[in-house]
Image 1: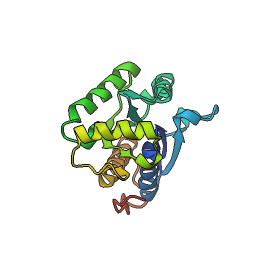
Image 2: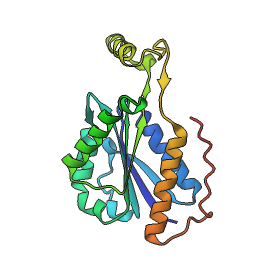
Image 3: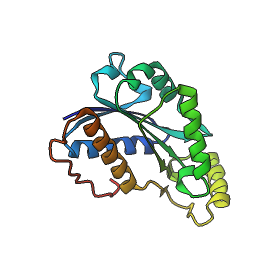
Length: 197
């Protein structure tokens, strides 16, 4: 069994849901995984206490959460000493047309932090119109109608591919198991069903 830290930054909750899903998938492989919001990192948290670290951040107005950037920058040396992975959540990743923009966000994050994770993934986010204030809801609907005309903006929409999240978690776990020379306690099987919870 290996220990995993999943540190994430979330704007409206979707990245937190993805981090929890990754923790579940790692747990199903028999590993000990803990999710921590970068905005609420305990003062006594030591990256060195974990065998591997995953970091996730959403994109808002073209930027990653500053808390995530600060976490990675402050822990860059410890991250370099263990297997790591980065996952990004954005609306750009929800469409093929946005793929290049999403990749650019990743490159900018890695350049800004000087970090070189072993694995990288990009996931589509969600639009929770029901949770937006009137003005934000109006603005986001206008943007979505221009960029994603087929999307029904009268209800909340989720673009996260949960099977891709499970596959990423299992890929990272297999990489860590190989790098650390440990087998998954249950033989590496994953029971994740790819369904949103």
